Length: 209
Length: 251
Image (tube, rainbow over all chains, first blue to last red; front, side, top):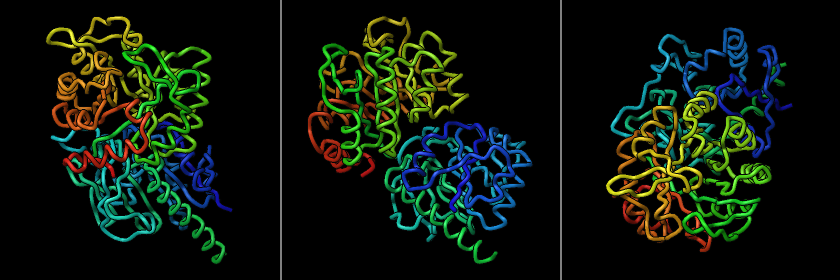
């Protein structure tokens, strides 16, 4: 069974994310305790707003997410959810991120307007499962002030004042700085690609057990 | 490079799209969900649904419209008109709006901007500023352009940003519905004073007007209604026009 968990840590509205996944045939469930992540096939960490909001994902949640990821469960961070995958952010320097990806998030510099709001293009730097079928230069919808650095984990970058990681993928850990649920057909394609990874992960689990 | 956004506005009354001239004399222009779908197919970057005559019955019809539009479209959707309290904003967002646009309520209760920004994030809070030329400055009007708010447009936009607004939707009352061009002087003055995006509105009548407001007007986005409502392929044609002239747009 395909059961994708949407982590609701009270950072913004999740209606659009749910609708986006529903449009590609995946209904998300919202776990009320970390134990519910045990049998999920995928995890989505959404989020808008301040990095400090991720504090609500306390040790219990972090351990449960880390265990699931360790067992091969695909994880998708969206916007603030992508930034949380990294070690820290200048937006809330005392707070540790999930830290599965190396690097520290930074504020987009002047002279460009910040927040970076609107459609900007993806510079796809290497092939990935997440961006499969998404053409080079595709425009997607962003709304953020902080961003993650481009490291070996980046599969696409975007430039606004600085060049930052627009999409990351390492093993089954994925993240997008933009909002796939608000990026038209290209965005839905990315959600579909992630859902396909969760189906594949379920099959793999079956073979193992 | 960040694209300049083309936003279509659906002025809705009781579940149907209408369009007025200088905020008066509304006439029907079609079914909102149908129009939204057409714009999306043509490549619109964002939609704004404005409840132009917000009433209790109107608001229920509006929520049904938001639900219908947001189920089919996966581009940003903003909703304005009649959002007076946190509960109105919550209802619009729960129905599927990504952003709410506050006008009169933000003027009479600026703390509402901050509360909504804290609850949903600044990206979800648009402050709509309706302004009219008054000598060498611009005066803000509330209640659909009827009541002078006693505020300067540039000053109010700066305050709105400080209070947590994520974008400014700036409408020239003088130009609204006239098709005589955006007020580039107003737009440039506000856009230069704030660091958040400014959406220019009011007066779009030709493709040249969009070019002017994106260059001279320093707008980050431009919003129009009738120019898109009554002619097919206008969105795609407009984007091609801007792209050919070096304005970055999503094509």
